[in-house]
Amino acid sequence: MRYPIYRPRRIREQEHLRRMVRETRLSVDHFIYPLFVVPGTGVRQEIQSMPGNFHLSVDRLLEEVKEAQDLGIPAIILFGLPERKDAVGSAGYADDGIIPRAVSALKKAVPGMTVITDVCLCEYTSHGHCGMVEGEHVLNDASVELLAKASLAYVRAGADMVAPSDMMDGRVQAIRQVLDSAGFSHIPIMSYAAKYASSFYGPFREAADSAPQFGDRRSYQMDPANSQEAMREVRLDIEEGADIIMVKPALPYLDIIYRVKQTFDLPVAAYNVSGEYAMIKAAAMQGWIDGERVMLEALLSIRRAGADMILTYFAKDAARSLASSRI
Ligand code: PBG
Image (cartoon, rainbow, N blue to C red; front, top):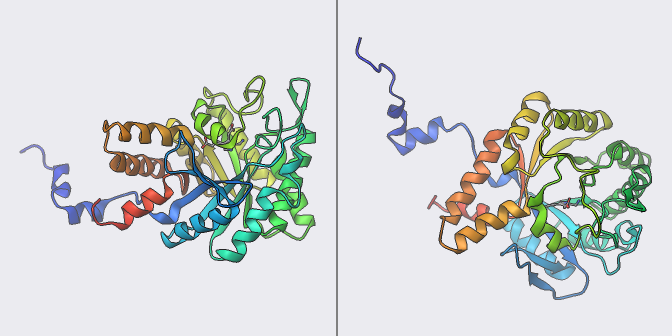
């Protein structure tokens, strides 16, 4: 018998055929675009380590979100930088805080956009930890109460979804209860379920001014060595009422995304974080890689691993590339 009978190259010869047998699709439908909102007016200041991303005051945020909408991006996620920080992060759950102000302006000005709010205290606490502290210990249950309070403030302002990123135990259940008893049982929770204590968050912490002032986040975020534990974290969040489960970061954790997708039956989100973005941008700016192709390949790989949606700073760039016929 002549060998090989099957030649895999036969279905790779023509672009049309390659299109027909393609297993994974990357589309603007999957993108969630993260944005940083700051006090003041007329502010649009580029974040140094994240070229193409900006600190935006509410007025300029509206323009940015309209542009994202015109590109077909279905959702944004908001991070806030407050006027003041204190030990308990009170600007994070004030009804007139930066996020509620941004959300209500957005819902009026760009009604079709899905507005997700990150829920965490690290941008609002003077010590930069994601919850309340006692000495050097980050308190769990007291922090959970504040996170639930923040969620309610954001949803009252019009947020379509809340996304707790703090990694305190039991926060999904607490948020679900508070939202339900205030008449918001229809508002979904996207939980940062398997969030690792990662050094890939570096540029974000500069952007969000949220670096911990002492210690690190390893007492609440996950050990990068653990995969079994991620399954447990995800299962707990599902039991507590999460609607979408997130794995974060994305590229160094594709195995976790894959495993979560295979194991559970909820939609999976993956966060293509600031460090992943910065590395590709930096190499592209040096001319060392083709930034556009590397971006699309990275995003495709996250989808191939099993992510239904991707939070990415590339959202606008990728939307433009996908809409053009060049790639
Ligand atoms: C807040 C939060 C962080 C990120 C999202 N939400 C930083 C952190 O946990 O220190 C990181 C996002 C990114 O790096 O793009 N807890």
